[in-house]
Image (cartoon, rainbow, N blue to C red; front, top):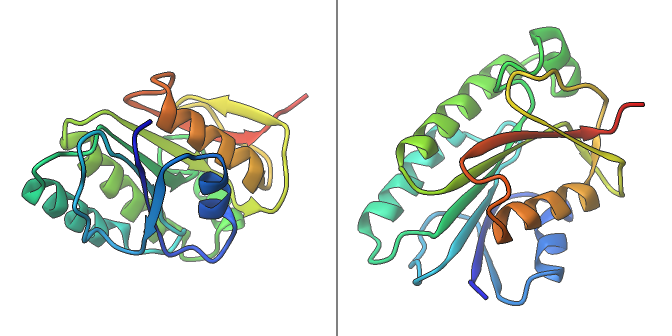
Length: 177
């Protein structure tokens, strides 16, 4: 099984939940990483993290690496893929949400430009627990208020360990009736 490298500054349970179901995982708070052959990278930024700057650090880490990651899985926010309007995004995140959306869109574009297999997982605000799950493609409207961290961790695990969502941006939200 490949090693999963989790990059996170989060103060919630998401990284821990991923590690509980992973044989070989390490967590770091930055991209000062010595990638090993076969590594899977899971980047779990927060909503207002400067991902537009941090993605430059990711690109530099890949440029200097002997082995590039086998795959990059990035957690992003809803509203970055024609999946929500500005009022929804402000409701979910706050009045500065537009800047966060732009930063995440830039980071996603840069990851696409790296020409490595990737998955972007767009998420509503995260809460503890499980949620009924619905996965939507880019351009499909995201609805709901929040997604459970256990549900999100399971989707991230699938994105990391299978090719099911490779080279796609998927949205996770509570299942609608």
